[in-house]
Amino acid sequence: MKLSTDKIGDVIVVTVLTKILDASNAEEFKIATAPILEKNNKVVFEMSQIKFMDSSGCGTLLSFLRQLKSSNGNLKLCRVQEEVRMLFELVRIDRIIEIFDTKEEAVKSF
Amino acid sequence: MEKNKPLVLIVDDNSTNIDLLVNTLKNDYRLGVAKNGQKALDYTEKHLPDLILLDIMMPGMNGYEVCGRLKTATRTKDIPVIFITAMTETAHKTRAFEAGALDYITKPFHTAEVKARVRTHLLLKKAREHEIYIASKIQRTLLLGQPPRDINGIQIAQLTIPSQKVDGDFIDFFKLNNQCFDLVVGDVMGKGIPAALLGAAIKSHFLRVLNELIRLTDKKEFPDPEKIISSVHSSMIDQLEDLETFVTLCYARFDMAKYLLSFVDCGHMRTIHFNADSNKCSLLRGMNMPLGFPEQEPFKQTLVSFKPGDFFVFYSDGLTEAKNQDGVLYGEKRLVDFVQKNAIIEPKELIKMVRKTVVAFSQSDIFDDDLTCVLVGIDKKSNSQALTDKAKLEIKNDLKELARVRAFVRNFCENIPDFPLDNNRISLIELAVTEVTANIIKHAYGKHTDKQIQINALLLDDKIVLQFYDWGKAFDPKSVPLPVFDGSKSGGFGLHIISHTVDEVVYSRDEKGRNHVCLTIYK
Image (tube, rainbow over the protein chains, first blue to last red):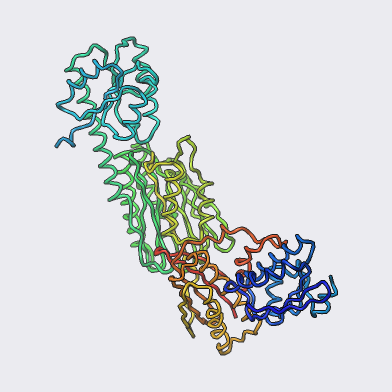
C-alpha cells in the first residue's frame, strides 16, 4: 500500500493513497504504517483519498491511536470523506480521534 | 444361544461361597463375579446384569451400600437384588429390604432354593419388562400423533423420549383446513399400561367429539376449543373417576388466517410463547382444572395473538422434571432461558438442541418420565409481495472479493426505477454487506478460500432484500459481546454497524446446516 509522508515540525502527515480500506487490506495498511509509527509519535493521517472504509479499517486506526498514546503521542485525522465520516459516527470514533477539515489545522492542534 | 441366557452377577468376598454359587447356577445362566462392592458397581455399570446375588458383609463397601447405590441410578435401579448372607437376624433382613433388595437367602443355603428364587425373580423381571415393552409400543403407535405438514406458514417439530416406565404422555393434531389446526398435548396421571391405554382412549374421545361437534355446527365455524374440552370431559368423567386418575392437558388451536391461538389449559405445564417483536418469552397458563376433577367450572379458553417469527413450546413435565445426578430438576426457568437464547434457530433444529441440552443436563439419555415436547413456529413474514427484480452473485471465500460484493450491491441499488436511494444510503448498504461478508469469510469459514458464498439481491414492492448463504460454522449473534466505544478495543464493531446501516437483519440456519443472513432495506 502506498503512503506518502510530509514532516512538518515534529508532526508527520501521512497521506493514505488508497481508495479502499477494508478487511482485504487492513493488514497491509498496518504493515506499511508500522515503520512510520516507530519513528514518530505525532501523526496526522490525510484521508481524502479513502472513499470506503469498514470496521477493520476503524480497528486499525484505533490500534495506531493506542500505540501512539502509549508513547505520549497522538493520532489526528484530516480531510475525511463523508462516507467514511458516517462510519466514524456509527462506531463513535469521532469522539475518540480528533478530526480536522484541513491538514494545517490538524498539525497546529498538537 | 449362550447370549440369550440371563446374566447373573455374584458378589461375595469368600471364594468358597463363590464356587458354590457358580456351580449351582452355571448351567442355566451366564455368570459374572465381583469380590467387593466397588467391583460389583463397576461390573454392573458395564454389563447391566439381569440379577445380582449380593453378600452383605464385605470389606470396604458393604452390601447395603452397594444396593443403595444401584437403586439411586436410573440405569441400574430396576435390576433385582437378592441378598445372600449368614446374618439371620430380622433387623438385618429388614435393613436389606429397606436398601431395595427384592429377596433374602440365608447361609448355609440349599442349592435348590437358590435356583428357585433366582428363577422366580428373573421371570418377574421379564414380565415387568414385557409390560414396559407393550406400554411403550402403545405409546409409540397410539399416543403420538403426526403433525400436519401442509399448514401454510407454520413449522411443527416434536420430540418424544419414552421412559422405561411409560406414563401416558400423548400428543395429537387435528387439521381443520389449510390455515387452521388443533394440537392437544396431555399427560395421564399414573404409569405403565393403564396410563398408556387411558391416553389412547382420551385421544379417540377427542376425535369422536370433534367429529360430532363439526357435524352439528355450521361448516364455516369450527367448534371452540372450550366446547370440545367440555364435551370430552363430560363423556369421560365417569371413567376417570372409576380409575381414580386425572389428566392434565393443553388443547390449542392455531388459526393462521387470524394469527390467533385459542387454547384451553387444564393444569398442564405452562406453554412458552416466544415473541419475536420483543425478543422475549411469556408463559401461557389457563385457569382450568385437570380432566377428571368432578366439580368443574365451565372450561374457559384463552386467546393469544401471534406474529411472524413467534413460536410456541408445549411440553410434558418429563422435560422440566428431568433430574441431574444431584437430584436437581431441569426446571421451567432453564427451559425458558434456553429457548430464549436460541430463539433464532429453526424449530426442527431447536428441538434437537432441546434434547441435547436436557441429556447433557441429566448426564443420561434414560429418563424417569416420558419426555415430550412440541414446537410450533410461525414463519417469518413470507415474501408474498411481487418480486420485481432479482440478481445473484457467487463469490469465493476470500477477502479480496469484498470489492466485488460492494460493486454488485451498488449496481443493484443504483438501477432500481422509482426507488431512489441517495449515495449515502447506498454507501451504508455497501458497509453492511462488507461487514456481513467479512464475518462469513473470517468466522464461518475460517478463511478457507475453497468455500463459496452466495448472495441474492431481491427487489420487492417496498423493500430491497439482500440474502447471504454460507455452509460454514453456525453463528449466534447473541454470543458476540457488545461493542466498546472507548477506543480500547479494535474489533467488535461489525454487528453494530450492520444493525445500524440497514432496517432489518435476521440470522438463521436451516436443517441442512446452511447459514442465512437476511438484510432488509425499506423504501
